[in-house]
Image 1 (cartoon, rainbow, N blue to C red):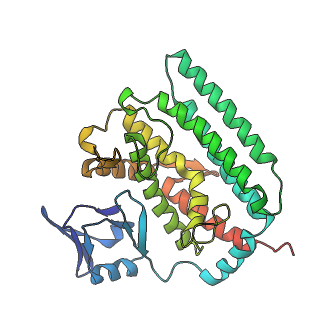
Image 2: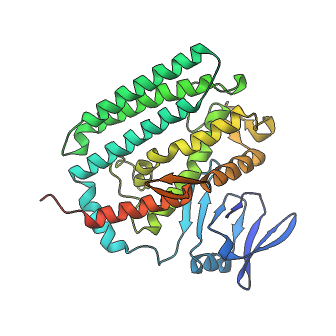
Image 3: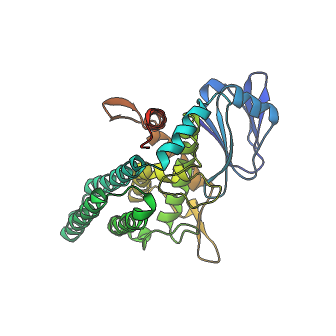
Length: 329
């Protein structure tokens, strides 16, 4: 389970070898063996004893902001053979193999976007036509990405970024058509979100950022050394690369919640500047829904595992790819 502390005044302490959650509703003991991670937002607190118990039991502790973005974390010193993997990671990052890797990531993203669009059904022929048109355009951009050849990422980064962005533009425009009228949106808006859909998407992506960063760290990979994203100072840019392959998981959950009319006006608020923010109820619904989705067992690479486990296996496989990489010099 993921232990979430996002209510003002909630504290996490240690009672013998148990976590103790204290809030206005009372106290609750939780055995650390039942906790995979702890999510703490503003207004909640953790004692040093509880933090040390989490480290001892290899339970990651993530501190997040109001939109679910991870801002800091605690992790065990047992994670990964860091020095060996990270030396090889640097060799890989500046090689042609890294370009092929990021091309595959982006093409996977486009395939996932097409699959989600194909899962949407409607009796409206106009919508069906828009889906088919969007998928054709996504396939065109995928072919452009696949055909790019270079030895230096900087030579092709602008083209890759442009084609990826154009594909996503068609994808989100088509998704909006299938939203209930009150949840239609005009493309992606990040910070701040200008509609309910993007408000939920941003928070969900923030959660996914945290899960991916944790998986990379546990595998011994440096999340601050990216391939495609390199320009952000002191940011976990490799997480921004890897998340492209898995964003569709959040997209699917948000689309399902909105099309099924699970979200209502109590779940979000609109500020004076027109920005949308998830409130406690909305965060609770989205967090629970995404965590449940991550715990579903699916087949990937011939293995039946939870999505959470597949994410961890991806990080472990990437670490092995770094270790086995042979420099082209």
